[in-house]
Length: 188
Image 1 (tube, rainbow, N blue to C red):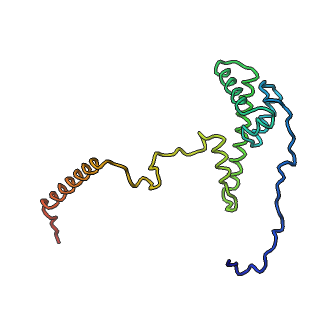
Image 2: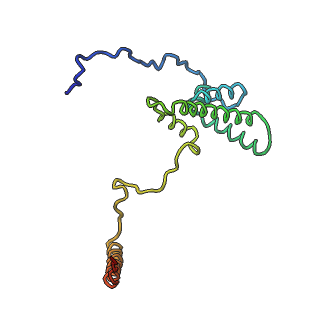
Image 3: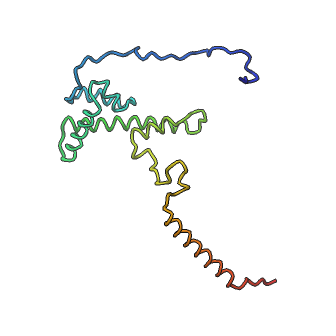
């Protein structure tokens, strides 16, 4: 195996990064998810969303599931549309503010480092797209699919023969027009 010219001996990196997944893990000890929204639970969940947790991770950390939280959000949105105010409407407003806060932090980091070539914003663009796909992803255009990139199209032999005949007829008509037209005169 070829080595770089300046590489004399192999050595260990000066700082090794190790991960211990069980370092701060504490079991919840609950028989099932919390399904009743309380102001404290909502605040804990929204704080995690503002810190950048995904909905699924934030919900698991507070002892519930993302499906339950989506139900709370739906219930709150429906109540907002009816003009009511309750714990669910307050939760929806707080949740939206927390998510917007995290997106704003990501956007500010992106803007602060706009000229920094060492800064790789791929994660930020991806995370913004995950947190708000309607506003932070580019819609895909319908294009060719398949391994050939859309270069070939499956047609029946009859369709192919018909298309070939049409194209040949068009080509011959254009050639006849070119031959029948007088050559352009050149004035010197």
